[in-house]
Image 1 (cartoon, rainbow, N blue to C red):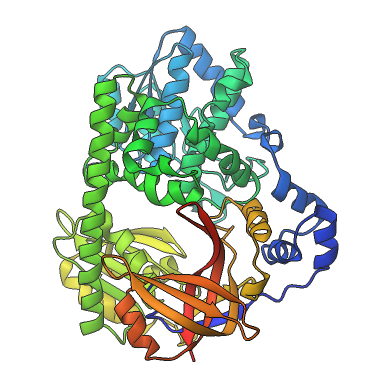
Image 2: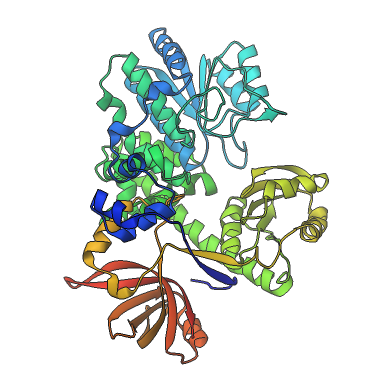
Length: 572
């Protein structure tokens, strides 16, 4: 747990009648305060958050275009026309493609798929993919997790006589205030102003899932036939870092048990190979264990590895594909670790005073740039752009901080860029090698960032003595799961704890175990996942510490005990 960036610990101060909320819903006042911090106020919102079920999902028929797309697809199936699903190489694209291909096949469609190659094709449907489809005698193309910005490509397909259905969840391109919608037969995107869908923040796989729901209903199939794809909708929602609020929260809450009992043999094999099935599945397991393995194919080889795994019924192929994805992910982890260390060394030797980090890593695999940029951003609390060698130019990915609109700042230096795109918190770009130094200089010269912007703000939900923690409270905190984007794991804090004992554990000396004591003598074990030697050096023999933590139950040799998992610390 690096503590490189300066920190400011801050406590939420939102007001409410926490005791009334606690009594009304039978929860601890601590939970009532956390819900208020998250902006979940009013009986209806709190009840939906705590007790929402699959019956509270929005009707798929509310998704504008789904009914028309369903009519077209059912006719194409009756006419035995060839259908091709064009997806994307990330986890959302893979899951979207699987849902559409599997569901259409179940209805008797003549359907196949094409996922663009990250490096050879780039993102989304392109003219070469359309030419391939024409040569293969494809009648209908359905995009998923892409297509909303492919105006000219869709126009080409339509001019060539194909039927095109676009399903996507990305922002709608605009010309001034006017939305630029591709000229497809049907466009389904919850972010269109005319969509009318109650919750537009769903991923591409959920858009595909909702379309399949309407399709199956119109085909006279029971709801259980489309609900069986809940597992893949949940995986994509977590993997594509969608906000875990509203409908997404319900999809993931009920989707996690669906993943555990999945009937998909490929997904079962991947869960087994990654070791994810050894404990109850959480959103963390999807985001940091299963998800990266699904993404590894698209990053280092081809997303078809994961797609074929999920579509295959062949036990031998499933064994080989799941094994290969885990191997690729291990390789990706090693490469990421090595390149992150290299990037950190470059920052600390050359750019320590820069407010915007621009790090060129020749030889680094371009698919890792975004991950490494995210690591640098987290470590230094600075906007970070990592550049790698492309085929003819330098390509890069950036990750930003609050108060630095990365897309707007790139727009200011667009004369140096060959291509760029993104939003406030992340961006992608390509640039000629000879312009990199000038690019770095101008971004830093006009960053507009202050020292306060570069201070990591640690928001504490509740200042809570460790003596207040109980098994019952920890059980209640689980009601707030699944944790993730926009529904962070709550964090607590206590100041002035005495350190009774401290020891470094683990073969890599990367776990610190402490016994912490309150002034009244109440003690609790605490664990910090960090470099033990650096921790001890920083501690310098001091015996008082302030902590930011989350309480957990530690089970060891059949014995349960309470412990604090320390997220941040500062010695006195």
